[in-house]
Image 1 (cartoon, helix red, strand yellow):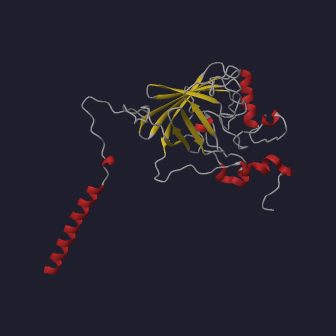
Image 2 (spheres, rainbow, N blue to C red):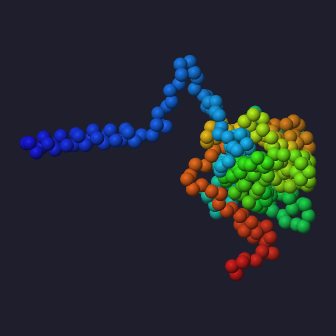
Length: 306
């Protein structure tokens, strides 16, 4: 009998100790912070006031690896899940998820003839026609062909990118197709305001408005799209981006798009960027050229392994 009583006593003591240890190990982050009387909790999609850490020049420190978790690369407007290309052999592997749009107000103000071109782009997004002139860009999503994604699309593709910030320049290194852009923070004879030539990623100058990095870009080649749905622009594209740190882990991103050749007025998109927090996080290689050579060049392609 004494042995039974002693056994129950030991079990009870052990349970108390384990419970105490478990409670002590719970991270404080699980406990909601106290809210001052009369203060309102932030609404969904909003953040409490935040003072960002400073870089060497006393500007907000944006250094890090960031990624958007939206499905806008498929369609920047609201969209349902869809089978994607070749469902007969790809099944769910090739399906595209549905998602909410990132266009403020939900509408892209196309001119009538431009809207018709957008629809034609969508119908021929998988049609690849490689020729020796600019007509090779008439059909086929540039992402499909592993071309540089352009701005703002590079910022919401399903790949991370790294911001490397200094006093004179801010560099964006994208995992997709080794895309790279430099934001010039000073204007001089080596980095004039006007773009020296059109390019896939444009020509960008930046400045600070309070704690927000504002990037003004133009000089875009007319061949990039905004998404797989065929949304596009001309060489008159002008993009103004705003990057604002709203927490240690989030940047609120906004882009105002202007192109009088395609749209009747400027329009805006916005979404959060999330800091990648893995201890060993780094960009990895996604050199997609080798994945598309056979598709692009067909009979002219030679398998290097043969």
